[in-house]
Length: 341
Ligand code: AQP
Image 1 (cartoon, rainbow, N blue to C red):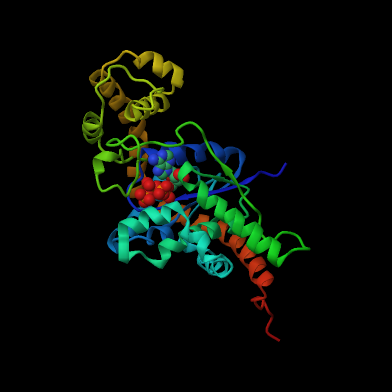
Image 2: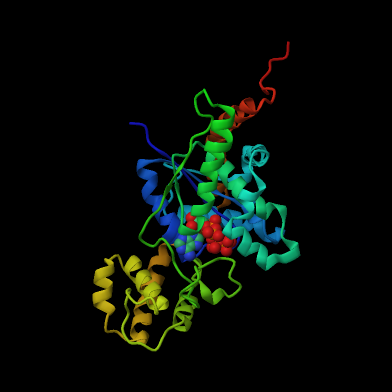
C-alpha cells in the first residue's frame, strides 16, 4: 500500500519551545515511520514579521538541527529549507492570483498579528496562508499535522485547491493538486504560556519567561518553572476551567513523565505547588538533556547539517517542480520544457 504523504514545518522565528516540540515535532517523529514525510524550516514565513537578518540564517540552521535532535531521521524523512526550493514562492504567486482577498482578511492569525504591527503590517503577513497553501499543495500532501491554531489556514489551503483550482481549471479532468486533510493530535495539542494559562506558548511572546525553550539551560528551566503563574488552590487538577495554569502544567508533567493523564492527576492531586514545580522542573530538564546534547553536536559540525539540507532539497525539488508545472499548465502558461529546435 502506498504511504500517505505528510508535510509540516516550523518558522525559524526564535528558539523552538516545548509547544513546538510536544505539539508538533514529537508527533512528526512517530509519523516518519509509516508515512512519506516532508519537514521544512519555513524561513519565508519567518520574514512576514519584522526580523533580524543577522539572526535568520542561524535560527534556520538551529531549527533544522533541533528537528534532528528531537529524533527526525533524514534517512526516513525529507528535511529541507523552504526557500531552497523556489517553487514555493512561484506557486504562491500563482495561487495569489486565484485567491479572493476577503478569504485572507478573515484569517484570525492575520488579524491578531496585524493588530500588533499596525501601519507596519506587511503584504507578506496577509499572504502568509497562501504561502502555506503553496507549501502543502506542492507536495500533494495527504495529511498535514496542525495545531488548533493552524486549522483555519489548512481549511483555506483546502478551499484554494478544491474550489479555486481543481473545480475551476480542471472540471472534467483529473485533479490538479491533492486536497489535504488535517491531522490533529489530541495529546499535547496545545501547550500554554507559563505566565498566562489562557494563551498558547509562543516564540514571539516578548516575555521569555512565558515559555521553555528547548535550548534553555537546566537552571533557566528551574527558574522559569518556579516563577510560572500559580493560583491559591492546593492540588493539581485537569478539570477546573478556572485553573488553566494547573491544567497546563499537569499536562506537561503527564506528557514528559511518560505516564497517563489519570496517573499524573492521581499522583499530584493533593500536592502543593512548591513540591509539584520541583518535580516538573526535573522532568523537563531530563527530557531536554539529550536534545540539547545532540543539537550541540550538530551545530558543532556544520558539514553534517549542510549535507542533510542539501539532500533534502534534492529530494523535495523534483516533487515540487512537477506540481508547479501542472498548475502552470492548467492556468495556461506556456510550458517551460520546450525543446530548442
Ligand atoms: N503552544 C503550542 N502548543 C502546541 N503546538 C504549538 N505549535 C506552536 N506553538 C504551540 C505548533 O508548532 C508548529 C510550528 O509553529 P510555527 O513556529 O510555525 O508557528 P506558530 O504556530 O505561530 O508557533 P509560535 O511559537 O507561536 O511562533 P510565532 O510566535 O513565531 O508565531 C505548528 O504545528 C504549531 O501548531
